[in-house]
Image (tube, rainbow, N blue to C red; front, side):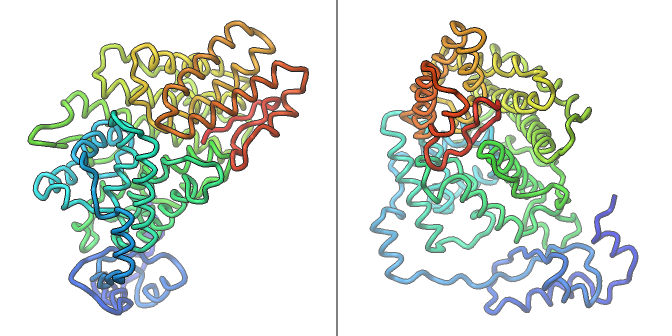
Amino acid sequence: MPDNDEQNSANSSCSLSHGDQAKLVAAAISQPSSRIAPIFVGEGGYGDIVQAVGHPGHRHFFVPAEADKSLSSEDLAYLKIKGCFTLPTNSEQLVRAYLLFVHPSFPVLDGQNFSQEYASGGIDSINLLLLWSMFSIAASYVPGHARSAVKESYVQRAKLLFDLAYENDKIVLIQSTLLLSFWFAEAEDIKQSWYWTGIAFGIAQTLGIHRDLKSGSKGGATVERGIWRNIWRCCIVRDTWLAFGMGRPLRWSTANSTCPLLPTSLHPFQNVVLDGEELYSASEASGFLEIWQDLVTVTETLREFLTSKETQNASIMARVEALRSPGDDSKMTLLLKIASRHLKLHQYAALFALSQRYADVGKSAAVAGTTSIVTAFLADSTTEYVAPTAIPLIVPAMLSHVKASVVSSPKQSKHDLDTHFRFLSMIEHNYPAASIVRRVFLAVQSVTATDYNIAAQAEDLVPPGFDWLPELGQQKIGVV
């Protein structure tokens, strides 16, 4: 079905061409520079000005950007004192760690373009805000130092650069804020996951990334359509899982978006070269793409579930069944194995959530599957490669084990719960959130050993800001 812009374009003759309309949009720029930037003009409001001179065939315009304004000497001095201009001595190691362990599961960057830019200009050619944001996650995979403290220092530097408007490139701002959304250290910290994804969504909408960039957009060569689509997918993925975990409303309805989620012509994992060699083998690149597409698919399934008011939905139920065949990872390379396990954790968490509305269909499989993944990480000593997203994804299984430990099968459930505790203990030096979740569940376990009513006490055990922890008696799901 054509969207409104296409329909209007077909049904009426434009008084002005898109190029002439772009000149009207460019008139809003008071101090234009030589840099070209995208501007999205929506329906209504200021968009009516463009509409008045002819229906725009598409609403993305590429015009000279506003000239960059230099920071004051005081701001620059402050950033220098805070270490924002002094990169870590192991920066190259951090870049490699990011591309090996973060990019395969969250391709918010154009891997090929990034690696080419890095190869030609070195670390100094990469945007500073983007680097600190990347490092804040990549440090999780670089051994040899107090990772949590180091990551926090990287996050603080990225925050300072963002707050002082050091960077104006909106694509970089979206990428950086999405990456910063993976940092969670304190329940009462205002600037944590939910805050940063909100900023990313706001900037993405001002660019019109939620609307498909027409192939005929004049100046569209400046921004690869596939990159925009992938960034929008990353926004949707973070929005869905954070809303689900924190028990908050989705920030965006896909009904308002014309940007297709699947398929895509962009292959985020091909031709990613570092130090003259491709980081991923052909099979790994292909596997990463399949895993990423599967994650987008399960995210859309969960998203539909969260917005559906139907008690039963055959379409969603069919996809629940499809979530039960994640495949074996025993013959995979380390990189594929890690990415595959995190996909499975997402699938099992979604399956558990959907089972609540479908008479617990798939619930036992989801709990057992989650515990098997946790066990696998412990068994082959790969907990050092666990991503921050894994922490909230195991919460549903832990909740199930807590209830079963006092209701149906106490011995096995306590054993499984202990497995999850060991898993959290192994990664809490890396992720403060793991320590928080472990403490909360130890408190819950303590309560279940008394004569107190579980459902009545669970809410009192939740630290401020951790409203995502469900009421045990009602079997609700909470995933950060």
